[in-house]
Image (cartoon, rainbow over all chains, first blue to last red):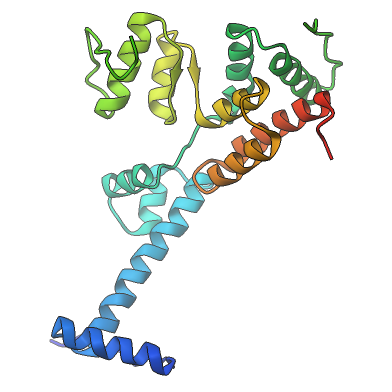
Length: 131
Length: 106
């Protein structure tokens, strides 16, 4: 049984149309088949992209983002890894920096972290000895 | 010995091979670990390893005078496409505070 389809038309520049024709010849596939495939690929990529953005902004978790992208959890996880997406907990950022400042005896960093912490809590930053 | 020559005695069987080896090495040798993925980072922190992630590292380089303010801003901008916006904002804020302290703000 044939699925019901709808027709969508687009307008291309002459050079774009020529390129489609050239590829159609090189790949031995009709222009319609190729364009349909590209639209499917593009839709898939766009959905993954939107899901990645949503995941990065913590609007969704991994599993919901995978559903949004229309792919499996494992596939979405590999997309996250492929895009080198870093989802680090921001709550630990100042603590990590404070630790680094301490380990490396970096008074400039230490002062900046204290000021940032003070701005967050609304309390004045303590004085830091300068070398 | 450099990290590229070092092998951990007991590599973990978790995460990717690179992360597993890096965590095991940092644990065994009390090294500072630069890692950039939330799950291995949390595991490393739970093991008591001192960790630094990429945004932290950029701020650290600026704080230590290894890179300039435009460089740290550029690095953080480039990280923005792959890093949680809130984390980038925090890193920019710390870099701004350091710049203020040094009189490098516009």
